[in-house]
Length: 228
Image (cartoon, rainbow, N blue to C red; front, side):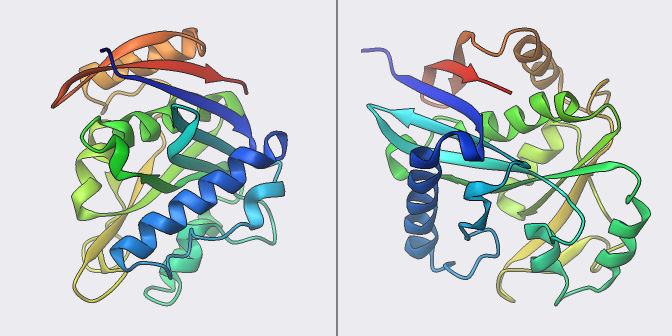
């Protein structure tokens, strides 16, 4: 039987139920891995008109998600909350971009039920898909651990080497390393992998498509329902 997953995209205030299921699923995954203190594990974004949410749904169950948060005056992004205790230079970086629209892809998670289906790649890709629809002058960030570097690199992001030690920081514990990744070429995608660029442009042209997304197990049919 063909595996099917629906991915739904919406502004946070438009779907309280999915926001709550996102947070519950994310918390369960973090607890399972001993990372319940992650700065992205909050629920204040549920009512934020500046937060766009993607949820992956299988058999009416939310099994994964990611948020795209727009920086607004007076509110720190999740990456700022995480990095400030490590490197105060994050303030300088954010100040230098105050005249541009800044967004962060954060809160990425997926349950074991959907493991091995490449859902994390697909969800992060979608943040790149919709970012230029939010603003013409936009820069996107991801603060992620080394085991997901392949995702951000494939989408055309580059490590911000001015922070930490050549970009690397000990987070969330001294036993792990993470880095802040930045992409300010969200339209032309010159640094993105060919396949990723093809899928991003296809989705920008049609946000309600179906596509057999490849993964190490074969394929999974993704039914996209993105409303921005």
